Image (cartoon, rainbow, N blue to C red; front, side, top):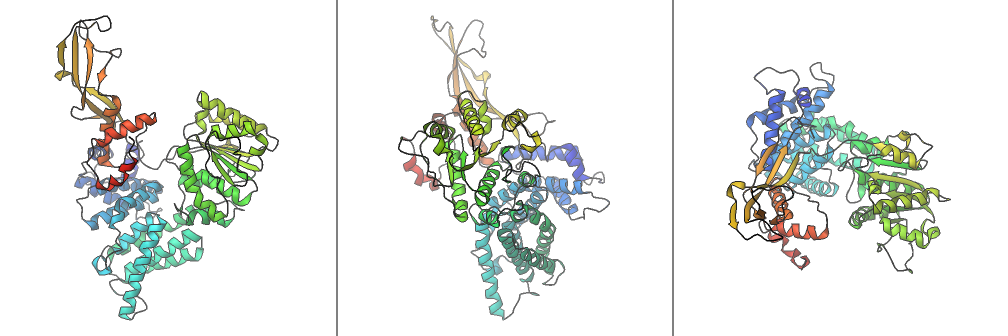
Length: 610
């Protein structure tokens, strides 16, 4: 929670400073926490002092890691803290296009350099509309190099390819018009070189061709040392940062990371299919570097991968599946506890398997008719635990025929009462099968990793079975939503007592939504309270009091929480998890009542449940 709003991190980022020129670590922590709380309230005013500090921290990152005044840790933390501040500042859409693009690139390069890669892609999605491909070059030449840098660091291959094709065509038209082989020495020279560098970097990450990396490096140096022109300061800024990023990009490429013996087609499958994967995140890189227990190694019979949500667990599973199908015989069964998660995995893997020349089995119900057998001609089946157990009971020999790998997602569900017994029984059966397949379990919330590893592979050390990492991409701001009763405005109505309702007074109290936010572990919670959203009624006794045993009626909890979720949409997108499908429907309707109408959503009206 305190990754970038932590006193030690902030102190390391600031380093030695002159008193009065910069805020202290405690002052900076307070400024950032205040900006985050304001952002939750959809207020994105960043103080000049906070923004100046961010640019200072961004500036010191240009120092070489071996500079005496700045060590490697300080530069890393400076990238992280400055990127977070730029991220907050970017939410203020009153800033002009030029400033938004510069803030976006500064945040992206900071996130990439401090290994918070998902945030750099999220930044691109917020400013993608500013990357212009429908305008003539003279209309945005002052931001063209910055746009190219922002588009590249977004790592969205389809959109990047479209931008590069458009810009390179426009530049080629300019060269023909001016009858020049190159635009070097003109106002377009530096931006042209940055675009060419991005073009070659994209080819390096897409195809793994090392000579493309060398070409990109040469283009970037031509901007930095003025060979192509000296008038575009921002192009030099972009080129300098991309030069420093090159080694990290090479180290995080799938073509570099996949274990020896893995066919190059596996990396190409992820780089060229949608969604494209051009680089890997820190825990994914760490997984592929394992010497013992690497799940991509066919010799690894049992593996348990335990990483937090948002750490790239799904992609790890896809890598394991595709690597196995590319280099080992046999089918793969992927077990997902929810059909919705299975559909997401099915959608993600369909294009990747097509590039590998492999086939995905058609989706089937959990309990198909007896004449619907397991599709043994398919290379990959995605099943629920119930569907797999049903198939095992029906025909265990055919179900596991030629199965070389079973991947179980959300393995922590073994702790549940009903499904846990089912999962454990299924795994136990596969464990004792004469031709036991390899098994890889994934979980974001498993607490007894050592015990489970011992059960899976009693003859192996825990470190040869379990892979865990606590890395997270997005920063988390912890908060709690709860009803708040406005007791000062209670309305009491006399009533006759009865056997079931002994109270002589019916009290009706307005209820609001309270949001308690805690930006740092050491900060006191900040409370935000809405206006009245409904009422709750209860019978008062003598003396009048209300406690946890009091029976309440009136506005439902889901309606209150829906108001809180709608309030949070002002700060960004919201994912709300509820217990049942009925709760999901009721909550969605309640949220819609708090949101303005959107004409774009009219096409979905036929899908509305009746």
